[in-house]
Length: 314
Image (tube, rainbow, N blue to C red):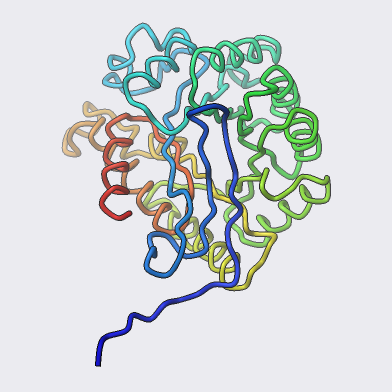
């Protein structure tokens, strides 16, 4: 008797979301099976890889990264152009850390002007990340969404404290996409999605950011939350959880001690850059395997490794 492969069919599927415009626009989601199970069904668009840049010079980044980007890191538009031409990620994440009220506290207008410079400098889709100060981000995203109308960017992220304005301005008024950020809890993720849907924002315009953590730092909660969300979306056909997921890996992995401690402080651990890359790769592989549709990375070598990993499994 010939062997017959067992196929796991799911009743639900993840929404297909388009980001960017023109020839380099990308899709997120679209799958109706768990990650890499192409023998069971449609794996959708596959995981996408983004590289992070800042609106200010990255003083606290490792020396190798600063040397890699050189003078381009002094100008976000030039930096974005270099990343697009030399490293070809699927998208670029512009972090507006200079707007942080506890830092340089750059004005909303100044940040918006910079964002449009970056958008005009590249063809890749953009993810615009805020300061994580909810009050400042509300004003920041509202203005950035206005000036970037027509570029179809992702605003990262809207939280319970500011989602009404960010989702209304970003999606309804200016036709962008919005990331709904919750704190590593399937019920909180579901609740925020429902609230945004009630603003008449369709699910195909929402990405979930359900939390992130570096491996070894509560990462098991992140991975299990993503896994539970995917199983509910596919197996239970829960439409309130059928949005793509993005994980800003680099926001965490370079800040934990393995990535942040210098070789002078911990010589027994070896090169700081190699440690940071290892943490970034390990974390990215974990969240992609759990079900994340996009990851944000910092080091181009991390992106290269993850792309090779995906190529072997697809």
